[in-house]
Image 1 (cartoon, rainbow, N blue to C red):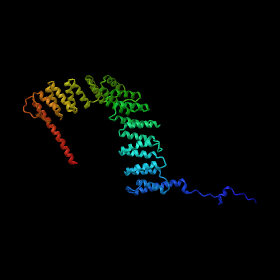
Image 2 (image 1 turned 45 degrees about the horizontal axis):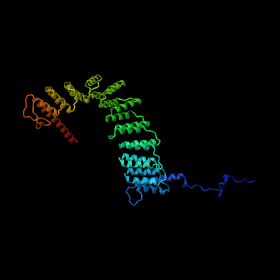
Image 3 (image 1 turned 30 degrees about the vertical axis):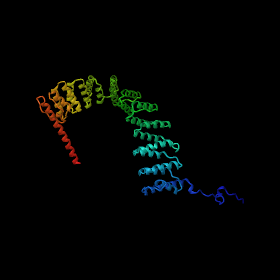
Image 4 (image 1 turned 90 degrees about the vertical axis):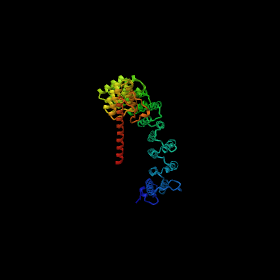
Length: 462
């Protein structure tokens, strides 16, 4: 009988053909298990330690614990372990140990430093109001990113730009935006809107610089929204550039974004400040053509255009449309009427204002009463003063002085006090003025006492 030779499968059972199995200490499973055990040991040691700093150690205590934990399992520290160490240092306020950990991570580890570690630190420094440490990291990250084998991603640029806008460093934020675009990333409209909003809050920013930045961002592909246009218009009007604000409004309409009443009102106020009354008429008609409903603030801007005849027409139109006048409306009309010498109409409007419980500034009342006294309308001025005092409102010293002087009383500075008058002589014409002044003084003292009593009662109750 011929015996067939053994097959290859049978040869594996012979001692001379057998192979030793792979060592379990060389598999990826054991490597991952060792890293997990080392990280677990690090966390357990972190919970037990009280974080006293030992000066004899070559590394910070937590960093030494990290290295020892992974060395005991014959594996290298992982990015996740370094992230845990940095989070522990920040949560326990051991800020002095963070730079040594970063130096060790940069120079002695073989893996690429993950971006999320740097993003976490920048965000932590920014939210903890540690601007100096945050800004100190920014140039180091950008300059050393290539040496550290890190490509700064879009989210990192966004964090940096937001932090710069938050601390009012808009110029650096714009440079960072340019670096972001040069790096091949797309333009983020949210970041651009944040830059525009922060730009308009700058006190040292001129309108020329703001417009240059606005146009440069448009060339990069930025499409502003309604809030971006509103912020830019508000900034230009505040800087006294009403015509530039009108150009931004026209650009908004060309881009297909319908302006609201707020945008039109701000542009109207800027145009009035520059004296462009022709543009004012055109823009106000445009509001009505677009179907927008002007509010009281829009009408106030129109009233402030120093045209008394048109202001009267605007007031009538407000009455027809059911738009009530506010305190600013009355104040603008009173200033215009007194300036044109229309004292009678100003008194009528002032009485209407008092009936609606709108109280203007003391200087407005004083100016009207002073003008009435200059026109020898003493009786009318006294009646108006009575109505003002009846509403628990005390006119200023200028009004009382004008009333007394025009009544023939020689007034000295030593004879006048803020709350009343001391007199030596009085005739029949001065008696009503003295009576009104005493009544006003009593009402003023009464209101002060009531205010003090309420404050005392509140403090006692507390």
